[in-house]
Amino acid sequence: MNPRLKRIAVDGLRWTLGLVVLLESCELAFLPSQIRAFSNTGLPPWIRPTLAGSEIIAAALFLWPFTIVVGGYFLFVIFLLAAAVHILHGHFDVGSLAVYSMAILVCLAHRHGVERGVAHERS
Image (cartoon, rainbow, N blue to C red; front, side, top):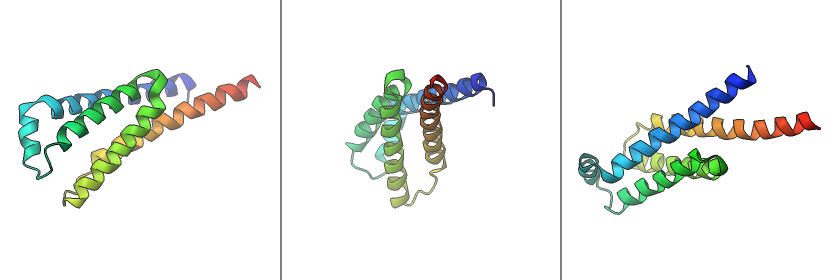
């Protein structure tokens, strides 16, 4: 694949994922309809702001160029925990969390690959 196209594709994937997660997390944190829907899940009320807040922070870190790795791993852990909670409550529709997790891994793998490739070319 053309290196320029690869960079555009992976950066586009990172920005799309980061903005989607950021928007969804803000909705969970602040929209009354989302707050009401979450209250029907049976989970303790403190989980909603904790989850939404941690996702907002992780997504922001994932979007900022200097903290992509920290934000990526933070989001990855959040998605794994969210999937586990869903499954433990009998909600097996965790496909979007799996896709988000794989997108994070692609972005992280590409970032490390670029650093190694640049270092190898200079040698």
